Image (cartoon, rainbow, N blue to C red; front, side, top):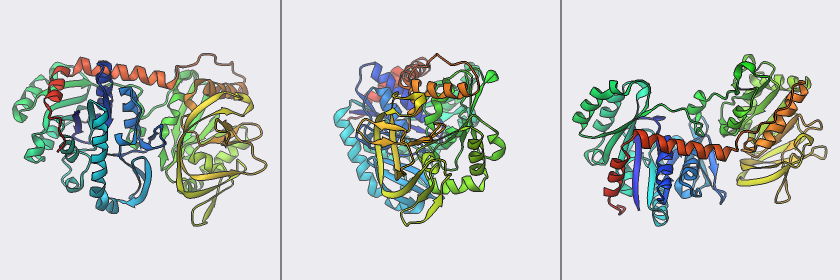
Length: 497
């Protein structure tokens, strides 16, 4: 087994995107390849076939590599839950909710599990594409960093350093990062990649020549900025995410997604931007909400706290008022729980829900993480097959007056709907990935407004992602010195330390 590691001069410099591109590049060459990230912090997660929860980036990278994602590809996942508190997921399962200092004290105990995951992957794959986290040069964190140089040492992997030129100061960030590394760490860095470049490439030539002289490292390529439809992973990406209709100036139906403070799995709504005549936007307050045709309450890492925020902001009352006016209201996962009458935590403390569905949710220590398939029970999409995944702690009980939304393939039921079908909720993340279901929903909104029906279905989400993976592989083949990167990989020692 050989490994190559991508580290960055900071967060959001493009490590995940380049790792995804390398996974598809090696896969297209017939190489058995898998992604790896020892510790990830992400709002959006991915459910493996075995029911484990990992960072979404590693799930996407496994897809690009053409292999099934496993919990070994991301043995530690941190999901921010509140002020300085994160849910810690180890090997796909809930481990604990820990305050940041408590986690730092336990991080080295988990390093053994990281090494075990690396060894299991080494037995199955010829190449590992390893992604670091943040920067390896955070001097206040280095003594507890188990995501960067310690992992490179465990895998005996050469490191490629990625820098984001769009932010400015790219040469200083590269030189500064290298200067803060220990000699043995700096020796692992074998090349530099400059990412997110806009403009004329030749304008960088003098700077690149200086950088190579100053550092003694080759610049392996300058990657132009790309705007590809790759699933984002965290809130930093959400700030930049724009869901646009095919023709925004002629949007006929408007969807508003409530930007909850602890929003999670917002990748659920990317498919909505693929339909003609549709405006999709995130809103954080009453002024931004307006009077959309459909309001979506998304998933959240803390349903009860976000429900309290929804009330304090005035959005809860406005959503109920819009429902009375005939608008549609949809909830996914935590948003679905909010639509009920009351929510109870594990101590018995409760908060009132929005009262739009006849159901009660009780939060329990056991977490549900699984993939599901089922048939829709509402009239406007009856018997359409959908699939997705569940990630939640609460269990929701429907009253005798409630009607389920999905009949699952295992015989159970999921979600609930109102009598007129205009309010519904489901635990199924990814339900909008099914084009026939989403088109049926949009056409119901259009029918209500007296608009003509849409007939064109966009490509399935998986088909779209596969095209993106190929585009990414083409991107690095064109702009990176892949022959030199392959030489760096081949020269790496195969043994772990």
